Length: 441
Image 1 (cartoon, rainbow, N blue to C red):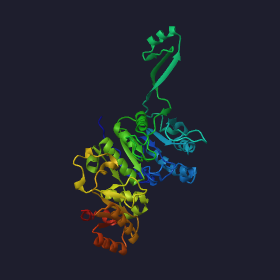
Image 2 (tube, helix red, strand yellow; image 1 turned 90 degrees about the horizontal axis):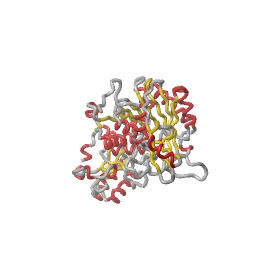
Image 3 (cartoon, rainbow, N blue to C red; image 1 turned 30 degrees about the horizontal axis):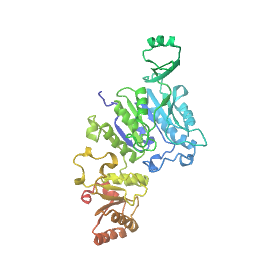
């Protein structure tokens, strides 16, 4: 299949930022299919991120109220309705927390007559309660922008079984090519029918190759079904809460153009890595301009922006900016937020390394990185990092902060004279100005 770039807007782009800021940059009526899976928490990427603890679903840990959540989503859905083509479709993925209120909101924005389906995604994973019936489904509201929307009917197998007398079985076998009889005087057969609005698609489990550890990650099969049904090749798919990028991967695999938006810099980097590994897409302007890659835009690039993002996001930004690998676990990291692996330690055949964050685990030649989102890192911060370096027996380490106190700098010098171990102090400004090459050497 040949993918052509849209003349209206840039596609194969991941925008980092609040979608309420990013969506107004898109022209009216430019998107064929919108899928969103907004969490019942506007800052869900800022919680403990890759599954170190189970995602908290308690109501009090989310928006202050359901009304606050609807107030948060309403202007975003208004913008999404604006960018949707007259022939476009809109899928809103939610669960029991606020689904009833979401339906009312979408009826108000898109119109009651634009409602097409309430899809039930049924799954069997997760625990059970002794106090209520097991909550084992999500709701996906499907709306169209107008009557002439794209819809490609999907098929599913239907199992039919009937009990007949022996005299009837031969007749049915002759008329039903898929018929199968059993020894209990039953006739059973499968036939393909139009897809119903209850979808039995297994949820992801932690041991599956597809699973990234993202708390609300949806299976690729779910997104492929939606994209196949409500778009055609080269149509533009938008996910403005794209998390770990499942909708983008599905769109790319099915020959669609796509745009992703997410507020989390960490999520944007994770989905970029996923697109590279799963879809073999190159990241960068050169590859993107010739239709063979993608770009990530609007990542934080000023000190003011970096001061505002949550500590976990800041740590990931700093480690990745240094060319390091962030720790997957943020609890009990023993004072080390990431690792830098010198170039000479990289395997000559990268395909022989393990996938993901485990790719360098077999190497013992690495330098620790510590990150503090402080105006000035002080002597106690350096002391703690020195202890971490001693425990790990590392000859060199990197410490990132906005600035360092005089006591911190003096302690770094004292530590070198006493132990021979080097701590490289890097400021955010030095990283942003790309003045770190010599210090990284």
